[in-house]
Amino acid sequence: SGHHHLEIVAKDTLLEVHVTGEDGKNEDVMDAKATATVLSEGKKADVQLLPDAANVLKGASPMTLGKGAVIVVTLTMPGHAPEQVRVKLD
Image (tube, rainbow, N blue to C red):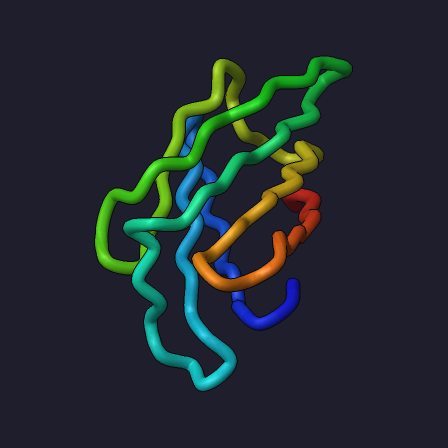
């Protein structure tokens, strides 16, 4: 996605994004801004992702995050340009 590596974990309606730096170390996300756009079963929802732990952003989707859902995460870390990643759940 850019200077950061994102691991996206989706279960039921919960969305977690774990952020590490290029060096593999956890990144502090307390001042990060992040959103996710969820596309599933012909519906679209925007999810605000908020800091939950040192390197974890978390949000709740209004729809179940199942197979075939597409998630587009936009992350802005302090001092960096916005980064974006798109994944499709298998």
